[in-house]
Image 1 (cartoon, rainbow, N blue to C red):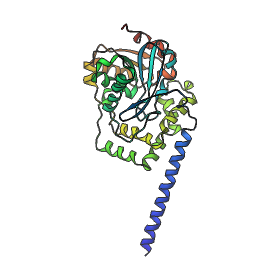
Image 2 (image 1 turned 135 degrees about the horizontal axis):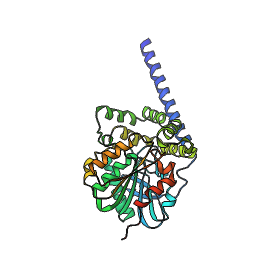
Image 3 (image 1 turned 30 degrees about the vertical axis):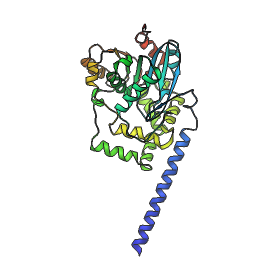
Length: 321
């Protein structure tokens, strides 16, 4: 009798703890999105087969597609400091990748090839012209593999701080598969997600990795990334779990070797091992060009936009039809 009472009490306490955790999770998502920074822009919609894709379109001229970093807190907001200037000479498309920003966040396994299909379909269905591409950090492999999949859709590919070739070659293993399952769980997985994507942790990323100079960090940047990480509630965790499970990576060695399109790497001087990473890429394809922006972190287009624009200007000049 006592054992039965103890089990009942234990189940009641566990249930109460889970219910309390669920309420805390919900409160976090509501609080994170109340400033409405991301939705305070004019988005277009592209109804893709796996979900609704939001994107910005502005300017006039040859098309230029901007692809943000593949991170749960990233979105097209990443390009907010350069998009107006770029639109003076280009028709600029800044996409929120599926599962990120204000695009739909569906409960699926997000893979590199899925994103390759999205980018190729977006160019075919929305841009409808051969386009230049600027991709950031973890999304550089998506741009490379998209071009490798169908080079006729792309002109020049600019990679901003791509990760190492070893990082792109990671594949799902027993540990990473378990981690993905854990992070996908509704209550505990959401709690872990909220803890790892807290405003303080995002602010720390800006001061240690994203920017080289802390004085350039604005509270709006942190708030926008915090909002992006929590937009559309707990579904925000699915991209993160796929990324942690190594499902969003792809070995780009062969693609880098065989692509005939112009590839330019833009590196931030404060990014660890950026010179070694550039060397890795150029050893495979010696025609790759590269430029280092001094005193810049992972996001030079957000941190030092004027220097970034000056650096890429020669590479995105109009191509005659």
